Image 1 (cartoon, protein in one colour):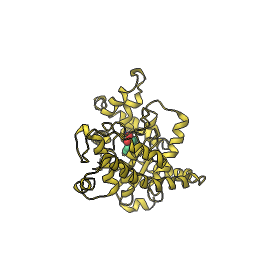
Image 2: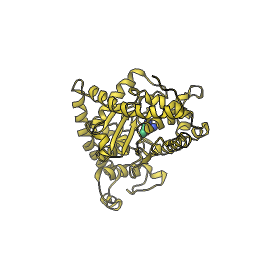
Image 3: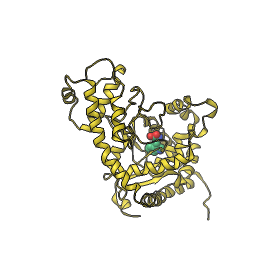
Image 4: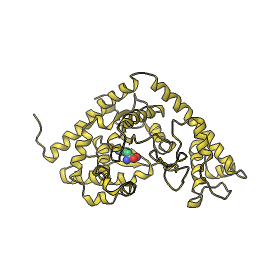
Length: 342
Ligand code: TRP
């Protein structure tokens, strides 16, 4: 193929579910890193709509959110001339490989997945789908189809990455060397931005109980500020990094500040806030967040106003991604003994 093939760069693949609006947690925990690393790797960024239907969803919303997430990838700084941006369901090989991987994945491995247990616990037991249980295998297919070396994800995806490696190893062992064994790339600070309303829970784009849970990338400046000013803290007054669950709210704000301010050390940050109150901390965090959101929102609006632009990016993305995925899938089919169609 093209320049990618000849680049000799390692591949990166990651994805986000279009199951809600992207939050500053998605940006700080994952997207920012994708943007930073996109030139160093041959990058593939996918909108995982097939994962989004593993829990009850609204079909009209799904299509809309799929476009929104893809546009936000670009607005956050993914360069579509450099990275491949695509929609998972546009590439049938994801489902086809997932089936084959299902057949080498022991049920016991899936039984251990903590994210499944958490998500299943939030639903009526009878309505938990088989797809939700199988979610990690589809994710393994996403990664292994592209022979990705590295997978930049949030901290909550560690276990899924481990499973992907186990599945790849097992397949390679059973059928011969086929897959690259991928590695997770997990950012240290702010790999995990916590909910503003409840700092003991990860900030989630699909949380709907409270309006003050998350700042969305497309929130107006007023709303974003209001949410941060209302963030849950504690009854103390020291502004210090801490892993005490009681102080998780202040710690979360400090971590957001740390990433966005680019200040060198935690000591310097604590010194910066010495003698100040929580209101002051919140207002400085809000300033930084608004500064971050402004250019993203401006680019997003430009993309929305250019008819056909996003569709053309996604069509080109599907073309590029599809070629690679097909190649891996053919190889896998041959290895498991499927008769080639003539
Ligand atoms: N499970 C991931 C999440 O919720 C999303 C995802 C699906 C993904 N397929 C992937 C991430 C492949 C990285 C690579 O964050």
